[in-house]
Image (cartoon, rainbow, N blue to C red; front, side):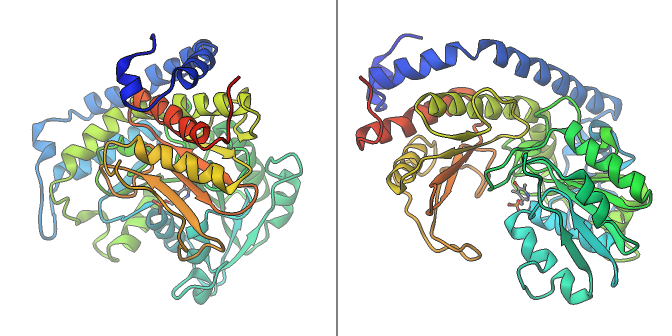
Length: 427
Ligand SMILES: *Cc1c(COP(=O)(O)O)cnc(C)c1O
């Protein structure tokens, strides 16, 4: 597309536009591969919805106890079909990804049990759940212990160390697909499959759990296809498609999903109750759109990797690496870089575009953090957003984009702010 008056009005210079378009042109083949993944995932979701004969009545709402909520039950059947598991728990009562993961951990672990984290330190909020960081009510208070197996020097799971960490006490081995907010490689489903193979060889009855946040629909297969027992995630990330206003999911075998259900509600009630309060339609429609929305977000991440790599910044994944989640980490080297980048993302948003993000002391972080998000759903990170802890090497974690057009504009706007501040120069 040629440069336009519209772009000029929206603050993008001809130089920034031309640079980003040239980078984008080189990505055509890789975008085609992503479209192939999209095609497969879209049909997978469509087939599941047809197979379970989703109909208007499934969009109805329930209140109170929520008994006989067909829409809720059928949605869980659709998730189970798409992920290839016996059963699923998909609930607005799971308030976040952390809550879904916490539910699965507390459901499976009993006093005296141990959980092994096979892909290094788990996501920040989970550290409190486990008691790696002391918190009231953590698993540690219930005499559940943990081990963290650091990644190998090559950044990959250390299979030998994982094997060695498994003992009689080991009840669960947990893995994290996405880098989350660390500057590491995100693991492909196949790479997690290797971990699962080693774990099952060492102790067949260990429960394997994958934190699937940010990973859904970035590949043609999901963790259950390589033997993961529990696959867990958030509906305000990929599988909510930007429409789900709340929720989490847990997919797995009937027996384990039942354990999770009785932990989420109560023993004796399990999956039978839980009103959906009018969200069913959004959860279905969002799940239907999710492969497309995830495709937009991965293309956005890929473009960001190429643009910022070409400008000399380190990124993870790098420009030539495959993307196994929607997160792009960019080391901007200077605090001014993070401020300008996040300002650009905020000013590119459809909501709250008139505010300027500033770093603040967020609970649970050891330095101020800046966050840019102008989202329809509060805190939704499938929508275009960026977060940066204000410490060297000044990495910004950038993710989302409900549409690719918006994602690419966000990148241009972020780059433009860096140019305007004299941090990046074009000849
Ligand atoms: C986002 C995320 C979580 C936690 O999800 P919330 O919905 O923010 O609680 C856990 N693990 C990973 C890898 C994530 O990206």
